[in-house]
Length: 129
Ligand code: I3S
Image 1 (cartoon, rainbow, N blue to C red):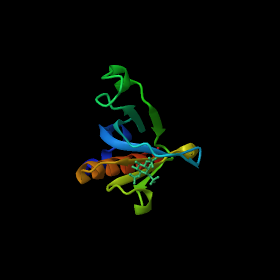
Image 2 (cartoon, rainbow, N blue to C red):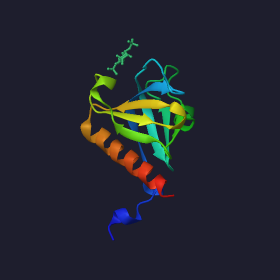
Image 3 (cartoon, rainbow, N blue to C red):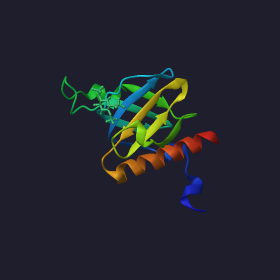
Image 4 (tube, helix red, strand yellow):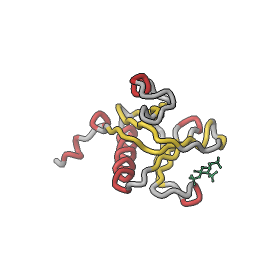
């Protein structure tokens, strides 16, 4: 039995700062607004928090606790974004339910590859629950 056999969504946790923009809401395209964002995966839910370091109001502990956005990963889809979606490299497309769509990005390939894997694994795990 490999460790993967026992992997479940509870073990799939990750946090870090990624560039993020919303691109669609309720299935409608919205204007991009890339911003460094504290990104947390926990319990099958991805949350985006304003990066305390870049918040205009200064560092706030509340920002780290209260998410700006919550994406339920059950029924979501994650993929590498096509070149047409952004001029940036290493871009992941995340499509949530209710027609919400985000791009997340890091200039560091290993960082974004790790996120791609953990998000893909989480979505796959949630299909079997
Ligand atoms: O897909 P787009 O519209 O070319 O995205 C770019 C714009 O959102 C741009 O801002 P303006 O709203 O001022 O045009 C952003 O600064 C760019 O970063 C967006 O493109 P990339 O290729 O970086 O996702």
